[in-house]
Length: 347
Image (cartoon, rainbow, N blue to C red; front, side):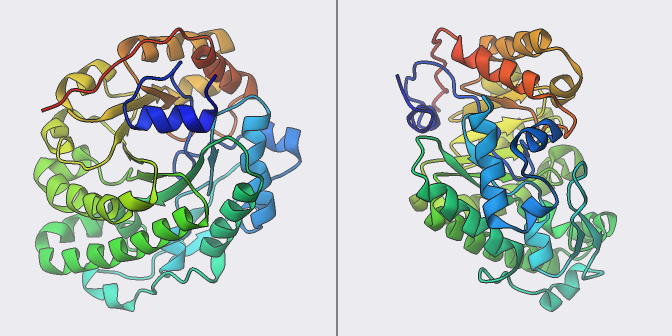
């Protein structure tokens, strides 16, 4: 029998496995729930600033029969905070969020700070990965980055940012290039600390928000820069895009990632039909994971696998009020699965 790490590694390369892996990467795709905090004794907000607590909380999900990976951090505010945003760390039932932007316009990007890997919560994440790595468990460790568009729109008022992508295009590119350079540094540091796979989630960089032209110019271009810089340090790369994908199928074919992960609003069948050369990951409804019964969640998981996902996962970060029994039901669906091999299409 394959270990979770071996299984995911093969799935990322589109090679035959005994069954689909079931993962929830971390970062924006947070896996931590209140049930888990109560069971383990490790809680938010302390877990956001203490590497030992962060590491143990991430490990506890797998130990409690949950997702087959370790994923840190548990939010998508690390990078924006490191560059100058003010963040409220929330409490046991609310995730950290940006409460003050450091700049007012893309032209102000030179006022931003560069990420310092030796301080702040970025160092907490790196130390947590090292702690997990030292335990030498046969489970993949996921590095996580917030995508360039999402970080940029966390550093200034989002509506102004989207307008200035068109009105101040040259400076917008310089701004996002600066953000991307910092993300590459943080991503590489996570992988060198011991993470095996990197996930980049860009919920604000969707086709619905940007439209196909801007999506290709600003999202695809900078995501590919990150992937290309980090590919030699990782076992695989996962990109998560929120929203409806229908308008950007063509553009998604230009992504250099190994895996495409997407929201439950998008059809697995249509993604498999229209997006080539990608392992497909997803896309069990997080609303259902939080509000349905274990039996219903297991049925949804089986439907996703029937439709052709190579890697089973929630469609986004799961709700903090989700029950551990529902997470276990999803993982158990994968464990009981007889192998069905879905190959990705080649051009």
